[in-house]
Length: 272
View 1 (cartoon, rainbow, N blue to C red):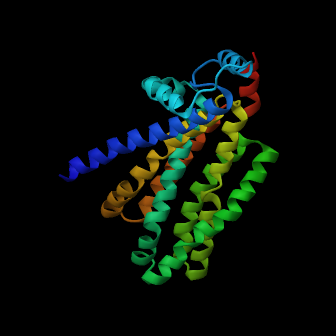
View 2 (cartoon, helix red, strand yellow):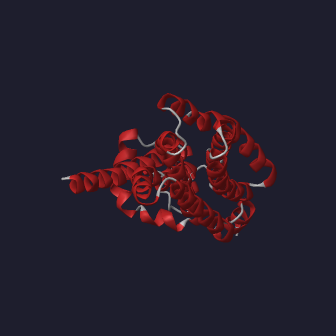
View 3 (spheres, rainbow, N blue to C red):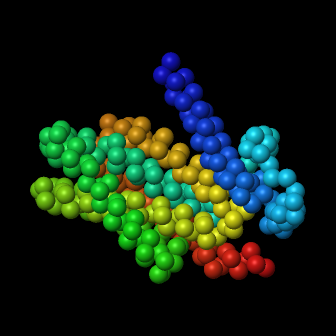
């Protein structure tokens, strides 16, 4: 029964997340620019838009949804766009880390650092609070030094922060608070930069679908994180939860460094 429940929820998650992410992007792009399909070439999309600007009827919401459902079976070609695929993979790791931090940090503080339940809840609220500054900071940095460099740096620093957290947690309450604040400051820094990267590499006819598809890929991490972390805790302890996430973050950073094009490179390639 438990296996059936897990499999059923997993199938539902795949369907709902991918469908909603895709449809929301398709609906937005279609209603604003007349492009129904993400994988439609840019000249085709512009031609459709031009015809509608000349007086052609704009699709209704119902027609757009109908077209999207009919074409949903051919969604896989979206993944040929490596900017979407690679940022989605990195986002998967980042949100995997996020959900482990949200679900297991209070338990980690209680069982490993012997912090009371009430205090552990207060301490676990430090990372989201520190994230406010982190998102602003990394957004500013990416505007100055580039999206790709900032995303890679954010992933690497998140990995480093996990080792620092384990080390600081053994030194007392104040170092622990510093470690949690550092974790939160870095934890949410990836997302605004990734979204800005996709916005820079896609025009108005494909931008929303690119973001919706990336969100579809990354949110699988939120499903896997809690049970995988629980299994690791049962077998190897809390430290290995942080260590295995750190390894995943480094791997994601390497993938972006090797295969993800810079915004300027992508725009130049599309221009030709």
